[in-house]
Length: 318
Length: 290
Image (cartoon, each protein chain N blue to C red):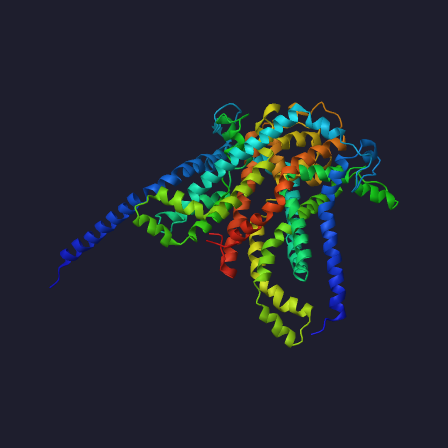
């Protein structure tokens, strides 16, 4: 005989017991939850708060007034930057710098790791590695200070140029030099540090593969092409995707320390422009609108890169 | 198999390149050290590269007797210690619960934290928030808003996840509470990762300058990075720092700047040989996804 009612009550009983179980899980783990409550409140205030604070891109903001602005103005500030020639300048500067970093400072650590991998002398290898990490630990302020000293008119680089019989160059004042300097500094700081993960991947390659290749008569170059590079390819792909996701994050603090009005033409990027119009000139809403625009492009790049990553490498950030 | 002559040639070439890389990497630093011990006239005529000329320790004496330098230096130490403690405590408070697979809502909470890595409020909303909370010209402006690095937190979480479940189960049998387990079992077992995280945060706080730059107007509160920044950039107006201190300074000599730079990086250099392996292991842990 059929007992629909019974089945229903049975299901209800299961649901109730599951509910009870869930509740008891919460009760059992209340201490775990109590640990994480404070950080969540922190996050809501200090991370999600400013996200919500972007509302002032659509509202007129008066310093000292309400922190969410005075009145709605719609897309007025967005139209404003679309008509602002400086905006296009900083936008293209940002993309050019980001692109240079991607094609130069991204592959350099791979090559560096491959070169280190060919060293047989472990002591020398360790020495080169240790030295190459060092700039990563220097404050960006100190790094900027060193750059100014080395490239100054009395600095060693200009001394060399003068010795070779050329005219001295005031590097930090010339817009045509800024990109070279910026990328070189980035390379200098990240070459060794960026190679760590590749070196780890290199030690993971099966030694037997090389032996087999040697028996087949492959020389070192062929081994590199056919064994070493495929061996670290997964690492390269993952880091490349991460890099594309962070494409626009070119190191705003470094620009801020290295540039000056004479080099704005090539050095001024979106973030520094936001800093100047927003905090220095006090156009908070206008600066926020530009910043929001950049953040949204950044988020789209991360999501896009993550999507591609999941499709082709089974690796995703979350 | 015998090495081909091409490979032998490559090996010499390789060692040469790597030595060159080491030279270029270390040169700026040695140059600064040499300048810091040289007299200004030799620096100005471009004669100082790797060895001091016109040996001079007078500048060290002058800088080290500058009261403001020590006030700012002490600030950096205080900000670094307080900031590192806050960062470590908060990160542990998140990472430990999130390392428990049984935790309800774990996926959602993780996403809630990770999302802030990829989308942040931006410079100006952050500035408005921090100043309207009344944090301007106080240590909280620099140690609170950037207290958590989600990336570091994820490394810690991965580490906690790999602690054998049985240890904790045994402790539960003995009647330990969650906090008891955390303090008596998990944290003592996690000393390596706590040390690594402490160093990650400490170096970041030590090197930090931008929050102080925009939120501080009082010289007495500056960290040493701002003291140095104002020397390097000289007269340039900023929201906070630059405007007050450096505006009427004329050109500051390379010698003085070099001394300040050396004194600023000295603590990092002294611990660097001991800490770099922790950093490397931290980066490796970060690459293992949890």
